[in-house]
Image (cartoon, one colour):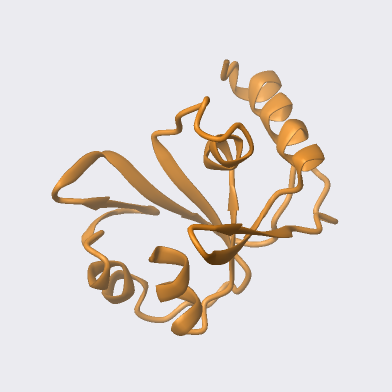
Length: 122
């Protein structure tokens, strides 16, 4: 629903981070947030769009749902990158009948290793 809503409003984004691991691991790994890299620096009415799908509680780059406090959505500014590498080519996968852009499996692993090295994220 979220990807469709963003796309319908002309917002191009790439899902990154732990949620990508959840997709590739078929749910074996659980993430507490959805991290998106926006493909455009200037996005109008993001709060309004997020409110449309119930994520209307804004705190900086984070959006929370009133009925789903354990999950939040975070938007990061472009470019999509891993460390200093901004030459990332997202892939499209189908999730619940909707095509979304995400890191490739290799970039997903690189991203998680980078997170471990820089943030001690296990």
